[in-house]
Amino acid sequence: MSIQNVLDLPDTCARQRDLDEFEAGQQEELARFAAQKMRENRNLESELDRISAQFHARMESNMEEVVRFQEALRAWERWKQRETARLTASDQPYSR
Image 1: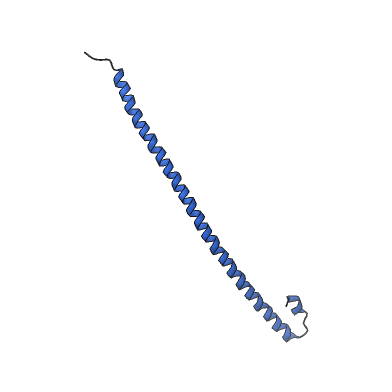
Image 2: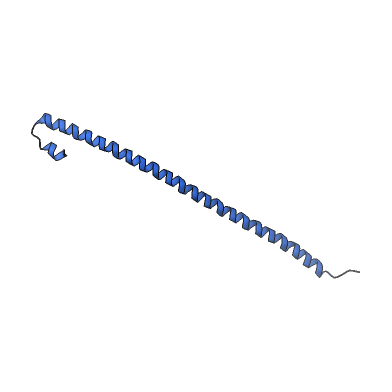
């Protein structure tokens, strides 16, 4: 029954009963609606956790790539230092 139909009833007792029934129906509908939204939120939270884990893995991979690049650069710098020392030593005139 719609709220307008309830308001159109002439009998006070019948109106009160119908108002109570309408309210009970609305409370049941609210409970179903709230339960549905809670299920949706749990599903969204699960999806968010899954996506978050994927992004954290990608971020970790990015940092590992940075470390590998840094290590490669440091290795090259050590090689350059040895090469520079070798070149400097070879440019020294022979002493007698």
